[in-house]
Structures are given as C-alpha cells and as structure tokens.
Length: 273
Image (cartoon, rainbow, N blue to C red):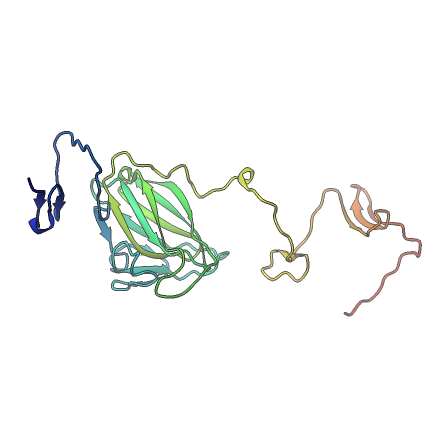
C-alpha cells in the first residue's frame, strides 16, 4: 500500500496523502491519527495596490511593492497607504473592497506604525453601511528594515452579509499590504473585540513623571492648559501647609480672591523671567 496522491505522485510516500490540487469529500472524513494541513487557509487574495480599487482622499500605491515585510505579505506584492500622518491627526480616506461570492471571512494585512492611530471597518448591507469594528494600528517600536516591526493580519468574520467592505481612516495613517478571503463556515465574527476599551478594564498605575498637556502637544509645565479652565467650585493654589493657599472662586453673586496664611500680606509682583 502506497499513499494517495493528487497532482504529484513523487511526493506521496507510504501512508501519506499529498495533493497539489484539492480534495473534496461529499460525506464524513474520518482520521484515526494526526491530520496535518500545510499552506494558507485563504481562498483568494487582493492586490491592494493595483489601482482599480475605489478610494477617496489621498493614497500612494504600488502594484509590485513588497515593502514592510516580503515574508509576511498576504498577497505577495502590492501596497497602498493613506497620506494622513500622525497618531492624533484626523483622517477621512476610504478604500472599498467588493466581497467575493461565498467568502465569509476577510483578512486585513497591514503595518502599524508611529504615524498611525486607528481605522474603522464598515460593511454595506443592502443600501446601508453598518459599522463592523475599530482597529487600532499605532505602535512606537518602529524598527525600519526589510522586515518591519509588528506587521499583522486582522481577521473579520461574517463578511458574507455584505456586498462591500469599506476601510475608513479615522486617525493617522494606514499601511495596507493586502487583503484575503476565505470560506470558513462557522468562524468567529470579531472575537468580541470592537476596538473600544472600557475604563473599568484598565490596569496598572499611571505614571505622571512627564508634563501633561491639554490642547498642546508640547507641554512645558507639569500641567499645561492652552485655553480657559472652568470650575463650578474653586480654583486653588496650595503650599505645603494647607492653610497657605490662594483661592479664586465665585458664589453666583460676587467674585472672590481668597488668601489663607498670608501673614506677610498680599503682594503683586512683576515677573519677567
């Protein structure tokens, strides 16, 4: 008894089933030992840089590029990236893919980077665009070589509900390396992950050893606010001793500048430094 072979009998030694095509089974397939499957589970892939995919906004594409990871590239070649750059920079670029017939899962191959933020995935159900999930794509470990840091593939299930899938940039840039499709019947939709994080699920103590800015990306003080500070109570400056304080407040009728522990009086000083 030899192996069962399809396509290339020279690679089917005793007891093996080797195929360079595919095997269809109309009934049950029973395996008493181990079943090893090699290769990709994708049924088809899309070259995102071929120039025929509908986009809005500004993009840079290449149909032959293997940038960011020639070894972890879902289509082998092809890249496209939006031109908005910066983790806090708002973007609005979109790219839209037709869902191939019978395909239930989509795989998004992309490069997170320090100029990225996050993007949303939408599905066209009939004539209505439904929000599917949010994908965060920022990471600061930007080792730039032939193989880049954190090249990843995100799986989105249940896309057979939709005729089209749209990727919408929200913050920063997206570096797309390809998409793929599969015919998994009962796979996960998004594994319970939407891209949003509830405050209750944060762990660890925050570190505030650096300056914090509100409406500024370059704070020069422990708390640097570029704008009006509003309080429905009091704004206070307190020394080491709590009775040494200055308070600014309003009771609805009168405004107050209140000094505590000011034994040496109240002084107004011009400070040019």
